[in-house]
Image (cartoon, rainbow, N blue to C red; front, side, top):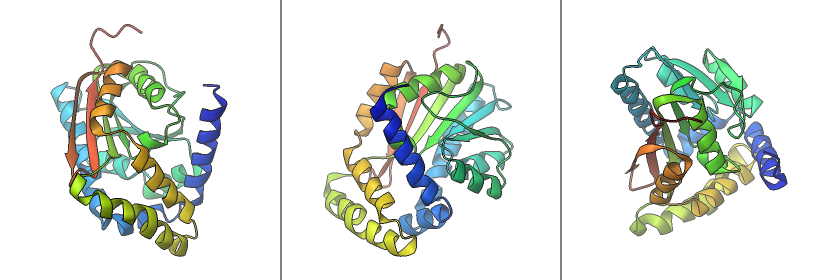
Length: 239
């Protein structure tokens, strides 16, 4: 991936998350009122169900854009083998301190894994940050075993009646509080911009299908604030 715009986007995102790596968990719990843990558990439960449905409960799961490792740890606590990957080294340091066992630095656009490796993959709040979503979806697909599923948890546009307050909170309240709590309000201004510009759940579902996934499904949680997508690598995948 040599597109200068995509490369510059990646450098900016890596730097931003590096700056907030240490207070990242506290800020997530504070700004979401702790509901982000419930959202992550929904992702983990869906991934575990997919492993059981494919008779691959002992297979390894790729937790991509692992951040500080919340999802990886939830999976490990349920005796799931996990390889946690992120392209931000300070975030991987936080995940290591949390006790995540297997950590690998990796960019979603060029993953350092051989094809047909993982029994499932999870991405929690990372899809917005990929410089090329479609390319990342295809790269994840390459690393999955045939029949394995990708599970994505991401912010989306909530129900219309609460959009006004929701985006006011994201655009004005969160950045000001973040500038006090971690002296980096820009990271949360970025969050507001990317959530507001992010496609609706239906469009992400279509992108997954375009990337080559089968059996694509999605559901929205908590008034539509987040969406949980899944898609399966076809058994007949030949690339």
